[in-house]
Amino acid sequence: MDTTQDFEPVQAGQQMLALMGAAAQWWAWMPWAAWLPPAVQAATATPAPQADPAPVAAVAVEDDLTRIEGIGPRIATLLKEAGISGFAALAAARLDQLEAVLAAAGPRFRLAQPASWPQQAALLAAGDEAGFAALAAELKGGVRR
Image (cartoon, rainbow, N blue to C red; front, side, top):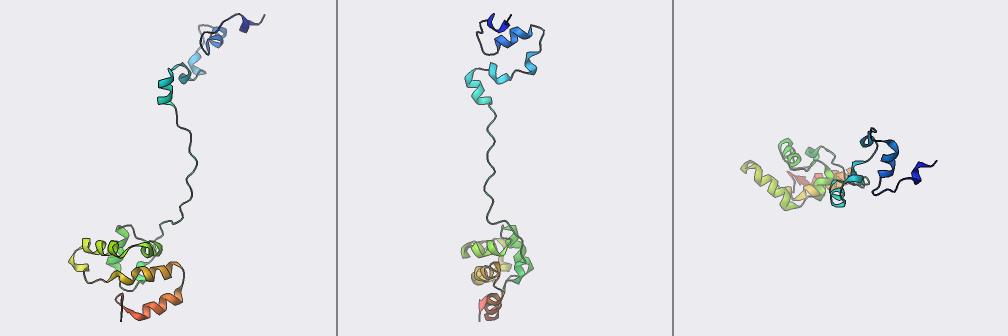
C-alpha cells in the first residue's frame, strides 16, 4: 500500500512528517525557513554568495621613496602614513594633496618642494631608469636648477 496517497498535505512537509511519525526528530532534516512566514523568510535568508571582486589593478607596493630627489626618510614616512607608499601612488598624487601632507606635518617640512615628485615617480613606476637619471640630474632638492 502506498502511504503517500493516504494523506492530504495541508502544508509543505506535513506528508513527510506523517510518514515519519510523531517521535521523529523532524527538525534535524527540515529546513527551518520552510516553516517561517514569507516576510520572515526574506529577512532571515542567507544572502547568495557574491562572485569574487575583480582583481585590484594597483596593489599597494612599498617602493623606496627616498630615491625621489627631494624626499628623505622622514618625508617618505609621512607619505607612507598618508597612504602613498609606492611610485605609482606618488605618480597619481596631486600636488595639493602632497602639499597638504607636508603642511599637516608641521613647519619643519615647509621647505620641501613636491612639484617634481609625481613626474619622478612616474618614470620609476614605468621602469625608465635612464629617464629618471636624466631628470634627477637636472634637480636639486626636487627643484630644477
